[in-house]
Amino acid sequence: MRTNLIIVEGLPGSGKSTAAAMIAKVLAEKGKKAVCVDEGAQEHPADYADYDFPDFETERRKILGKWRSFLERSDKDTIYVFNCIFLQNPMCETMMRFGMDEKASFTYISEIAEIIKPLHPIILYINRPDVKKTVDRVLDERGNDWLNAVIDYHVSQGYGKQNHLSGYEGYLACLEERKIREMRILQALDLDYHIISRDMKEEEFAELLDSAE
Image (tube, rainbow, N blue to C red):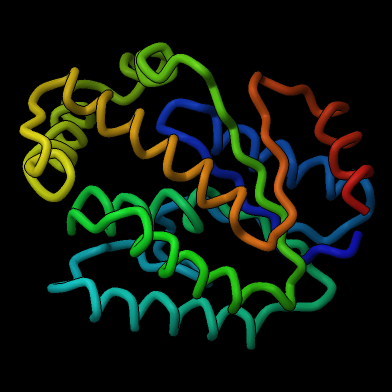
């Protein structure tokens, strides 16, 4: 397989972590050396566990530096499988936290894309059509503390505040717009990507990965 980096993207509840783990398993069964790293991992090779940056320029410099460091240190014989740090994290910060427009988000994500191009990355975007159902399916597992935290993050700053959004419905409105922007940005980038609209089994991921070789 030509790629050394597979990134799984999508909204909360879309099944990114499950898909990433399944992809790593499929790769291992094919005899590939695969490393699966989830979002927020303390020792993430390409990201920070805590996003406590004081401003966007500081964040941009630190994140791009981390991506460059990952590129330099990555093992050419390993396929890395990452969960959501290419689109979700940049969009949550540029759009939701700092209230930046789509062009600014695209510019930032394009910088990341340019850094990782030597790894021939593949982006798998899980696009479930119903945002509410997508989020609702993980509410029992993640609990009210998680829900209250993500609602507050989305509606109390940046995009949510600019558009006077509030509560659970406001949170869903944020996600709806984020998905629209992410899809447009993904399609505008010069990267290999695949859109997934449903749960997939291991053999289906195997077929998808075979087709990408």
